[in-house]
Image 1: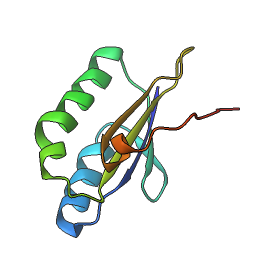
Image 2 (image 1 turned 90 degrees about the vertical axis):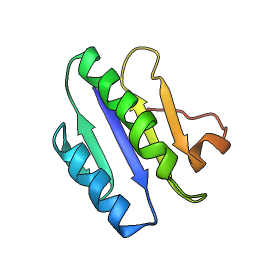
Image 3 (image 1 turned 120 degrees about the horizontal axis):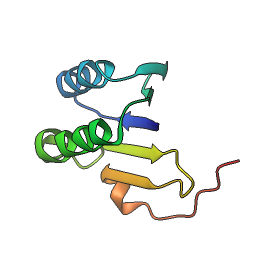
Length: 90
């Protein structure tokens, strides 16, 4: 499972991204989705973000993916890449 959170300023891009993510998971908050699927499908989602959406992101846009596994991996796209800090999940 992953938890995906996004903050995208452009209305058209945000709407398109939201529709894309909705195909794979369900919304838990306005810009936060929970996605349960196979590791292969999750990797495809990450690849689609990298190959399709990330190049369209502006300076203030960000997507953060929390891989809910024993390691709690975190993958960041857009502006979120610049923010490096420790995160504690309880």
